[in-house]
Amino acid sequence: MTNMTDPDNDKAIVETSSEADDATNVDARLQGLGKLVDMPVARDRRRRYWMVWFLWGMLGTALTFEGVKDGTWLAVAGILGGPFWFLFLVWPFLWLRDRLRARSLWAEDMTALLHDAGDDPDSTSTLIVVWGKTGALVPESEWCGAFPSVRLDVDKLERIEVGTLPGVRTAGFLAKDLVAWAAEKNVEGASGDLRAALLWCDTLDRATR
Image 1 (cartoon, one colour):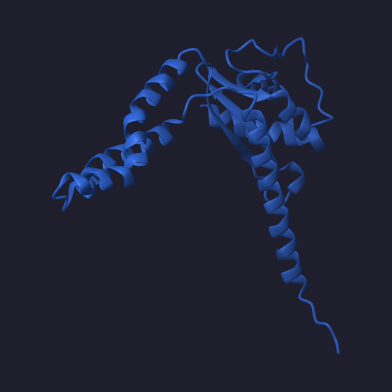
Image 2 (cartoon, helix red, strand yellow; image 1 turned 180 degrees about the vertical axis):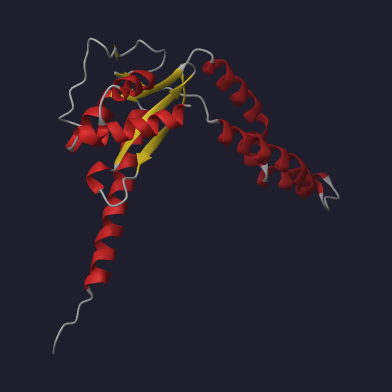
């Protein structure tokens, strides 16, 4: 009996597995940095919470009191819907606490920024960027992990130390400084990590505009 294999199918399986591993790696890094960077609840998530709060205010009232004829059934309905009503009452206070807390924090969001080099996988890079009130920060661990052989000019590029930015307990580099550093280099004559770093900085430049 002969085993038949499809090279194209095998290649697709390998690529899919590699993409899944990359996504898992990025998620793990986001979770790790999330423990070092204090942020308020994201704006989109706050909007969803308020939408759910508003919908439950209307539907929950109808479901709780619909068909209730005496106090006994009202008590039963209240017990069954109790956890939801508790969250309904608590959410405005949680929102207010989050808004007050946000005033003392620098970071507002954290995302993975990808430069897809297409047919050149060695120049494809994904780094996590922390977006703050006054700009963006690239954690040093992300930069060194993606471009280990690239040495930055510390005389021209300021290293943001741990604790410099409120709520940020990791060192890094400001996005504007990295973009300015990359602008002085020639990407056409670069190779390896340096080329990948310059291409990613170009993507960072467009993302921060």
